[in-house]
Image 1 (cartoon, rainbow, N blue to C red):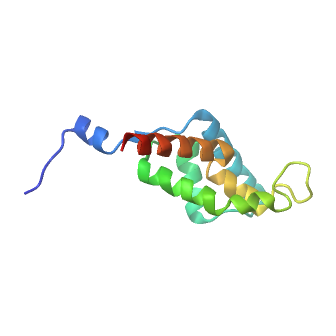
Image 2: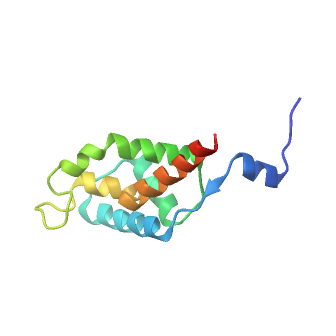
Image 3: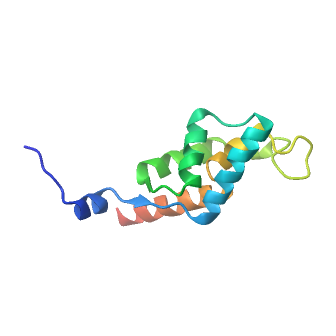
Amino acid sequence: MRVHLCSACERRANPSYRPPAAVARVARRALELRRRYRRGGTEVGVARARDLANRRPLRLETLQRMHSYFRRHEVDRLAYGFYAGEDDYPSAGRIAWDLWGGDAGREWAARLIDRDHARE
């Protein structure tokens, strides 16, 4: 037997979250840097950046993938060229990081995941 949820029930069962303007700005800038320098990120990262830049609502599962990305790539912040003022800035790692929303994206995803875990 199939159960059909009303649209309001569906939204409550599978909420989506609109990226903040700060996250969208970082993603837009990263897309421009990737075009200019021809480095950084994967097609998945580019797709994520497009969603973030356009402020498309994201499901919690997507935020969990973002959170996982940032945890795995924290080490990229230690590489040369990650920070302004260093030679070879922006590094491929910096561009990739920012495709996922950068520090603003990391904080936003972590905050929403923490809030979801607190509800459980």
